[in-house]
Length: 306
Image (cartoon, rainbow, N blue to C red):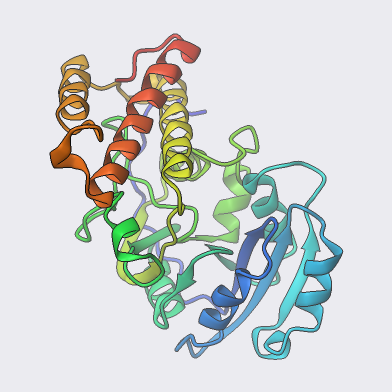
């Protein structure tokens, strides 16, 4: 790990000769078909393949992929990544099986928009790693879509007052960059792995490009408890990242922010009559999970991240 932040090199990579799309899969049936159909509707005019990296090692998914009606059009392949649990390991195995020099990652339960690969490859010409935009309206019930805000469209999110990052469900990287930084860290099996991946690439001098036209329809958890648990895990991972990268410049939040969150939670307590609408209750669970995760993460890491 570099001891200081390096500046982007501004190097040019050119146009990829082809793209390998990697989907980290687990218990993916039947939802993966929505993503495969979306990939079958891409307007990208270059060559690409789709690698389904199965972290469960499911015979049913393997058979489904090998007999899928889009198998030939997508150059669809199944690979077994069940040796180590976690999305990071699945993405590593899928990338190692990739045949092309540029790799794009998406998730089994989302749906890429038709211009996704075109936008990814345009931005990849002069960036080592690429991110795009998420939208919440296509795949989610309107009430559930209110539960969680997504980052604004004008720029990538910035965590721990450090470097920008993109989501693992909407990320592209040159295979040479992947190899140089050592791939995905499977000690982050799920939450935090994408932030760590983006930060390591930037600390090695590769600029993270952003193209809002690389658009993905993102699917939310469908119960408040699932949303709460997801927020806890995301924020526990953020606390770990803040500690791991503290020497490079990552910082914890101002504790006064925590007081503001606690006040917000108290005023919007679902038991209060003005907070009975389902959308508001979902928002409360998301923020409550985030606060819980930051407190737990700070205790576990012995590093203040509030």
